[in-house]
Each structure stands twice: as C-alpha cells, then as structure tokens.
Length: 169
Image 1 (tube, rainbow, N blue to C red):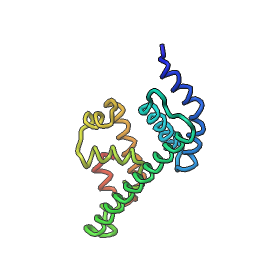
Image 2: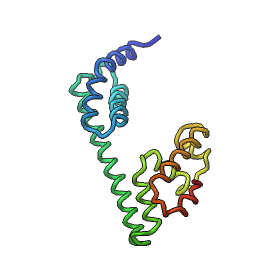
Image 3: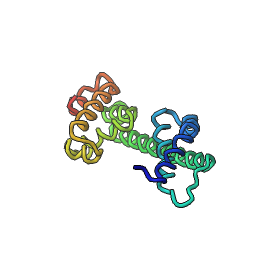
C-alpha cells in the first residue's frame, strides 16, 4: 500500500510532468534528453520532499531550467575535451593520420557508444568489469559493445582498416 507521500508525489507527477517535459523539450536537442531531464526534475522533487513540499509549477520549471543548463555545460565540456584530443592527435601525428580519424569517429558517436568503447579499449576493462561500471549484466554489455563497434566502423573512413581490425571489427 502506498503512503500519503507517495500518493501525493504520484499526483504531482501526473499533473505536472507534461508541462515540465514540454518546457525541457523546447530547450534541448533530443526527446531522449528531454525525458531524462524531466525525470530528473521529479527526482529532485522527491529528494527535497519534506513536511511542506514545494511543488508549484514555477519551482518545477526553475529546477528544469537549472538541470537543462547543467546538461548544456556538460555537453560543452565533453565537446571541448573531444576538440582537445583531436588537436593533440593532429599535432602529434599529422592531420591525415589514422589517430585523427579515430578521434573524429569517436567524436561523432553517441556518448553511450563512445563511453563503452573507451572502457573496453582505453581503460582495457573486461566485459565483466564493463558490465559493473555500466550497471548491467554481461550479456547487455556485450551487445552494447558490439553495437558501439558497429557504429564506430560506420564513422571510420574506408581507408582506415587497421584501426577497425584492432577493435575486433
């Protein structure tokens, strides 16, 4: 049986989620990110819930705006890191090197694909260890790694066969 707190939260979520989602969706590039951020708004509501919870729409949208800003800053930091890695590869190996092609291919991947490839190849983790980091079972980790490898192959230029062979592709 649900507590009063849980029932009240469910009611607030049901009433406010569409507005929060719409607010966030207009500000981010993907529906997936909007869903994640809208869910995070309600995670914050749940965490800050006390005797007199603040659940008015203005507060919910303020939380959504702050979380959206955090997401943009995180994305900007990730893009700056990818740019820095590519620049370092250009300086070290030249603009036409396979290393630069790898940096470009990695930058073009979804974050989830890039992360699992980095865990497997840069951090040299086993499937068991990757599954632990990702919080999934080994079968799911294997599937995700397989899909990330396929996505990586699609991003690599056709002449860069050596690197795709090294990645088990």
